[in-house]
Length: 206
Image (cartoon, rainbow, N blue to C red; front, side, top):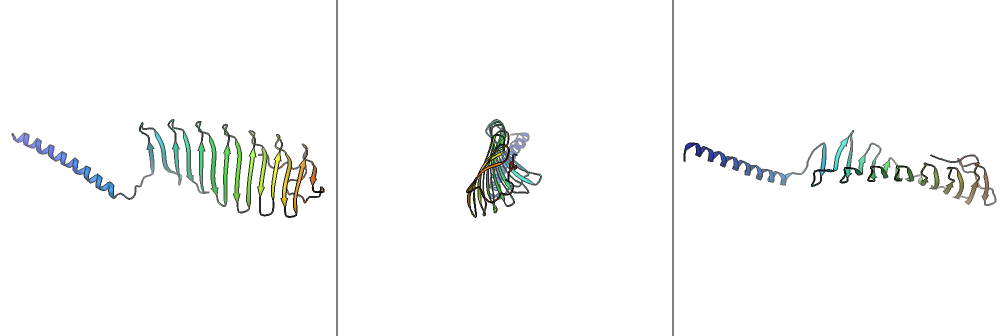
């Protein structure tokens, strides 16, 4: 064997030994890893398409989940106000959100056109459920607080038409006409006034 061949054999053996050693070293190092630090983590499927992402944007960490078409279907984020969770349909439109903002917790639902259709809110002062139509007008509302509870219905124009309430002094029913005039209440048409819901007041419409 010539000196040149000997040098070539030595080089090959050294290269293979270094590769094997590096592989062993990597495996040993991987076994001892207890944490990974990075600014962005992207998860892909077997075809290389992005399916998940964990990032920190403007000091707000968030986790995004995507379908096979690259549309975001789920989002979990932590903002300065609190955490929230969002769900999206195949067109990328938000369909549901749940979040915490200080003492308030809320669940919001949207239709397939992205219109707000339902809300549920709660805090220490009470809870409220709101139903809306496709134009965003109130159609129904239920409120409960330590002092009373109320069920209110609205017409197709968003104007309040009726209310059933349970108050400290008893329960009652109120009915309004299309002009906002209270035309009937029970019992005895002498219920205590309800702030913000007197004749001429339509209540919230947006």
